[in-house]
Image 1 (cartoon, rainbow over the protein chains, first blue to last red):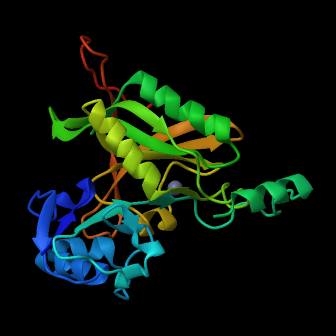
Image 2: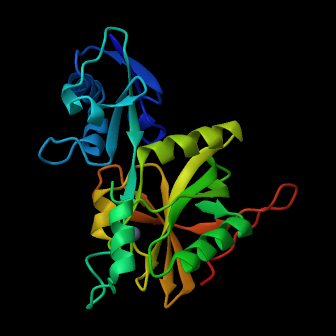
Amino acid sequence: MAKVFIPTALRAFADGKAQVEVGGATAGEVVAALAELYPDIRRHIYDAEGKLRSYVNVFVGEEDIRNFGGLGAPVPPDGEVTLVPAIAGGVAGALRAAPRQTDGIVRSKAAGRKR
Amino acid sequence: MLKLTNEVRRAICEAGERDYPDETCGFILGRLQDDDGGRVGDGVRAVANAREPEEAHHRFKIEPEDFLRAEREAARAGKDIVGIYHSHPDHPAAPSDYDLDHAWPVYSYVIVAVERGRARELASWRLEDDRSRFANEPVGTAGQAGEQAGEQAGET
Ligand SMILES: [Zn+2]
């Protein structure tokens, strides 16, 4: 069984639990098992198409699964899986009629900060 | 109700003005548990907006690593992450559909409207459990330690 750590924001939908044990050999299976166990969590971690929401990050041990094959990342028996929130938001649409001034300096700064 | 200390309210407004015309963002720390009719935010932790500069005027993002760091720091201080603040440059302090699509339940989402560089309205919102919408959460004033906590309408 894998140990899943539930983020604070979702504990209210998991009987207040901070961690539970579920089965699963991959990160995807473990997360799916969590959603099966606590169906009220489902809408907060999966979108309408059943895909993991973009701001839900899954770590196996200390490693972000993005670097280990995504939801197919293997989870060892007794492995630890942590759901870690990213936070995103913003105002609706593009507000400025004209694009921001993009001189060379801004553009190179942009390239440098891209992840 | 979300009760903010005057320091926290001021810090959020100043961050919004400082980062204008980009969106500012960060965490509100305090006591998540609603007791005495409200949760308390008595600390802030600014986070660099992780969005690309050309998107930062209407989008903000906080990476999971920053979330973990903030949560650990809060825990060391005996606090919780209570919510997230961000600014709406030249836009009202109401959540957008984009905010709704990306929201976590439970947390208070504090938005400060920054109009031509000046912080105006500040409002707090909580996601409904069914994700259908945000509900407005009244914002009150939390007293400092040893001071009587009072209620106060949000200043503009
Ligand atoms: Zn917003």
